[in-house]
Length: 195
Image 1 (cartoon, helix red, strand yellow):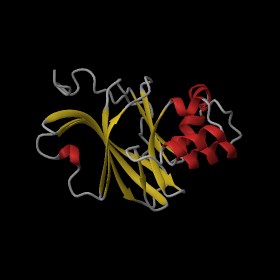
Image 2 (cartoon, rainbow, N blue to C red):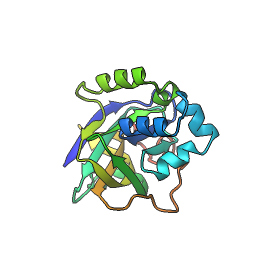
Image 3 (cartoon, rainbow, N blue to C red):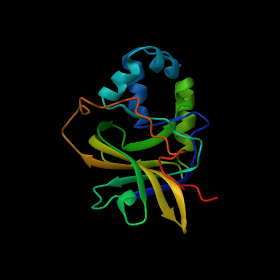
């Protein structure tokens, strides 16, 4: 099963996050974290703990471009590995824990004022079709991230693909790099954006 979303923007901050956002709210409550999770995650080890506990998957180095976001569940051939597409980054070893039957991609700005009200507003906005959110069974998922470009309507589009498969593993690979930069704006993918 493959789900695709087009024209996804980074809100002018070079970061995307993937996770069950209600699971993130529970992580915040359980650890008595402040509403400014952005500052908390950058000034303490809370962000690393959130990654190690499968709460969020961080994507740093996101250039200010419109992206195609692809979630692939048990696909034989990932979209970015199909003929004509280009892969610039391929990183395995992430895990995510889904508790509320939803997985979504969201921006760093969501973390800056992470209250029950902003979470409720966010969830309401994500009910609109076209938002990068999928429904899936609760449980643990192994995640591999591919970044590059896919051909859609005869043009290259910068893209991220998340390959998801159920797992019993509840920890990411020990060598996981939470600060790895997934930049697609330079020479990493030549001619991604047609001129």
